Length: 496
Image (cartoon, rainbow, N blue to C red; front, side):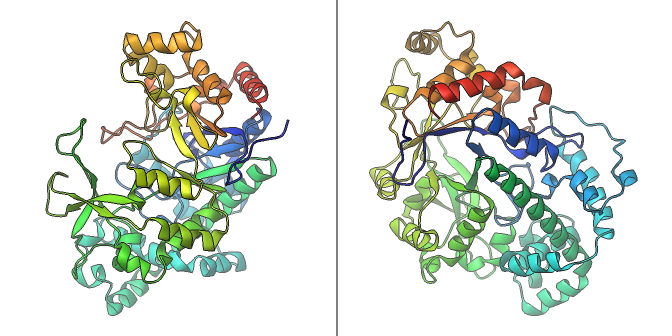
């Protein structure tokens, strides 16, 4: 049967949402080694065509991939130690793992100390070669600033860049030259880590693509304040002459919060960015497109309008809506990339201009089945109301697992779900997967937790909690032949 294509040529397909940190590994955190290749092979074996990951950048305080030290760099914690050994940078003795880690949960503090000690040994054994020098040259657009930024963070005991000595905080040329020389070895170490990450990631992506798997990557609309991006590109943001933010990101008061949410991310000065045709954003999109095949843009609404809060405010109440770049920026991106392999995260209450912007470029919309079964208010996410040009999820990294959702749902919502699906709710995760795969949505994505029918303790992120997130990992013995057979059968049955 012929496959259905959208304006953006997204074929009818399905895949799994799994961040690489959740992969099995004896080193306390998932990485880009053998388990990642094994996961690609499972995707291929079960006829999946998509692997969705979260942002791949180096995480900071709180370990969130949505608050990274750089939007361009890769997360060193994902580097495979075995692959470093295969490359000759670590001996078998150095790699011998006497430390024992929990294989279901990440202890980031222990993992960071353990892996970085080995990274430094690998760096000591590394000799610069042509491949490395070419990499540094090709990534120079962001790599030099990022490596200096990370070296400076080490030098200033981890403090945010706005607390560094004034001369380097303001990037005065004499100070930049001084610290570049002073911290040259540490700068080289961070360049080495990026070289290793990108080499391993490109090899993994090549393996995935050869097996018919495309990778969906994630771009958060905002960058972290404590990032190389903000420090090295102050003109892109609303900063004063002392590089202090004058207004920051958030969302207004609503039913869930009387004071709104004060995110604190620096806001883009879109007027300034427009002067050079949004070059910084185009560089960001281009860099992401080199890492992944399809880009999911988080908080898509912010391109139409965004909630701007004075930096002196302690809540989001005093913010106001301001206009984003709208159509302009996507015209510029289209001129760069030709086609736009973009998915729009368009969840929440949206104004007509957001729908118009999304639809003008044919971006698929996101649909969450956990939001579909509201017995009292109804929902546009109910499967029979979905449209082809959309991406249907059972849930996302920010949602409870389907099993956890069902346990907490009100009885009326449970009854609606069971009547709608003609089921008894005893196998709810796979009932949801069936709904997603059977729907007309061109793309269906299922978190690995729902593939494994796991409860709330496997949840990836609870947005209201400041700690304890991003820690979940699975084990290979959970991926049974029965699960793989069922996933393959659903994929074939619903022609994905």
